[in-house]
Length: 93
Image 1 (cartoon, rainbow, N blue to C red):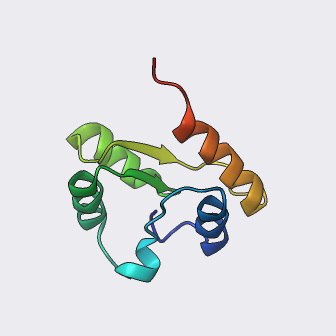
Image 2: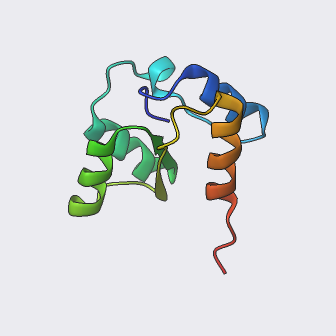
Image 3: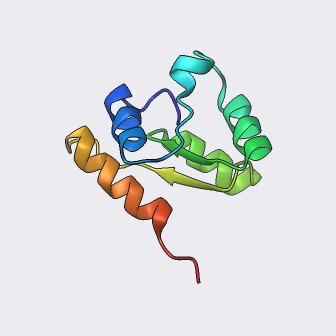
């Protein structure tokens, strides 16, 4: 999870059973390029509130197993986490 996302969102996703790597804790200040590298190497979905990251991912194809751009910043972290969980749990079949 990108460090632009609040810690409460990372904690809520972790509490919901997701394996969350919160870059603010593991590699503070990491660039978007570094985050894309980590996601690719570990097969992770990137969760971010950074629209610029979405631009980089779409135009350059630089992301891991997927990308979720959280655009519901006015919602409480628990509700944001529920919505993100729905996105990453969506059946792909």
